[in-house]
Length: 96
Length: 209
Image (cartoon, rainbow over all chains, first blue to last red; front, side):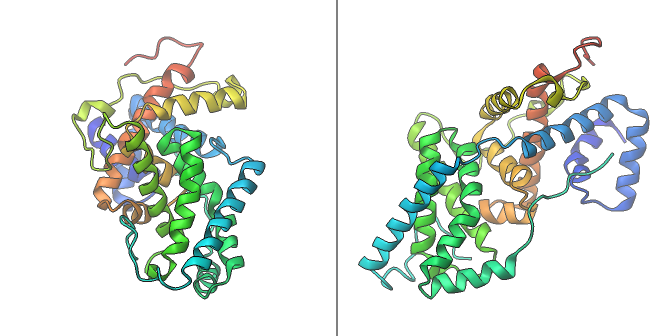
């Protein structure tokens, strides 16, 4: 396995979505290839840092304000057209 | 080396009961859905638009649109995945309005293989969390993800920050599974490369290959 082969599989490796044999081959590569080991380790850290960073948290006061605005708009919509919009498609919204 | 596990809990049955109640006109049930997912929608919207006001508008418009179209939601996917699809579309629309000179599309694809190939291999030690305060770290992470193309940061935020599966991400973005995987790999590698300048080992050599 080359470093390029390893990189192609990196996402599946980190997500643990591969068969045991491919996984064993990748882990064998990691045993002797320091560069791939570092790339793999720092990519994993990148994901974990973003996941745990609380980047763009919604502050409580803004959250209350937004919820109140949303519910107000929904009430208005219900008052204006209780059933009429059902079945109408919003431009880009898939109906699954 | 360990793998990354999704962080979101599955509460599909409970969610469906709320959706049914909301469809039947129970505003309290819809408010509970808002309460459950408003933080996620805001985070996704701000990751995509990179603008606080736009993110606030996206949250309002996405929930209103979801409410108006609940009757169209046929429950073949989770409500959350359906809501994410609406929110992503709203966020991309706002981004296009703000940057009309640049095409903003989820169909952007790989220009060269080199754009994600590691150029610098350096270990991160000590741990970045020990080098910076929480505030400094958030600033670095924000600046770094801002530099990624919208299609990459959208896939990254859904998969790696919000914990959607590859299939759910593909469904929400109307992309194929290989397209999601390709963008995710490149987003992860580009972020890693960009973070190197902040996090690389300060005590060892320059870490170049």
